Image 1 (cartoon, rainbow, N blue to C red):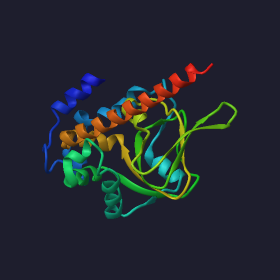
Image 2: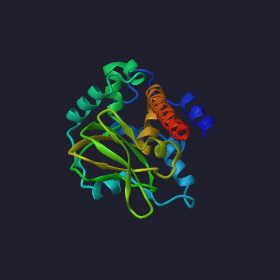
Image 3: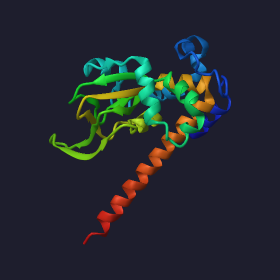
Image 4: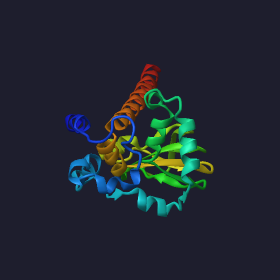
Length: 225
């Protein structure tokens, strides 16, 4: 999968710096879907060995997500990710281009955005509010793994490998989220590969940090008598 992804980025079309995502709304007509469906086809390839796919379209209806005006959503996104190591190098214009591929929504408290063990085709970025990250036990009890706050990512592992969700995530207070779907990531790779590479580097960096933190906690637990 990694070789295929690198090959896809290396041969992706689109402008390297300026206009690749200038009009993401027309990307569907500009991109040959047979050539740009890397992430969406991952979910097709996993059919039969994973739970049914929970798309963002279905989840948005279930949790009554309300659209946030794009200017406000993009402003919040740029504010919380301005210091992100990889995407900040693109400058405000690059973050604006990245924002073109996102959907911005507002949610009431106690909305289950990500369901444990489902297969989901989206990740989310917290822009306002807070979400609980829980591991649901076999009898229904929840073990709190942590909380997500503005700037945090959730659901990126399942988006990248089409695997099942490890935890359940629900809003603790009124929250604003940015949503990136697999299809939007495919369009970004085709139209603006430099931007897609910066985003994937950000995801890899955050996943690596999370793994190191988990390893440190495990080492502490194993060291206890």
